[in-house]
Length: 183
Figure 1 (tube, one colour):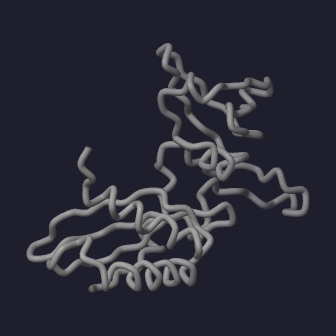
Figure 2 (cartoon, one colour):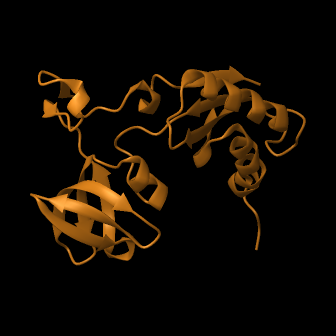
């Protein structure tokens, strides 16, 4: 079985980003004129701020620059975090989206919208209109967090007038947490 460039990159970069304290969520390599763009998407349970993005960018560059995995062409490195529209495909995605509203399409063709509760290796607990529902991951075809506006916060310390916009902090905004670095 042949190993692709992306497989080699993933094998090389997963331990690197892990030492920085984040998970490697996705990689993409696309042509851009006489160079290529390598997008490295990372996430962590406590979020990823710009300092962490810069740290990942330096660590990835330190490993890639002396290697031949990308061949001789120059590359542009972009380190980013997932946006809110990223499908929930791993248990860690569900865990990180706890208390968020999610639309779940099931393999049987039905769908359900509920608030994410606890999750574990086998499945997730949802609150669907005040009723608990346990979903096994293998029953889920797709799941995407829904953006909520004007949601009253469940945090009693937030005050009666506090409203949760339902939009993740800047640490989850794909466009704000991107650091471009040319190699």
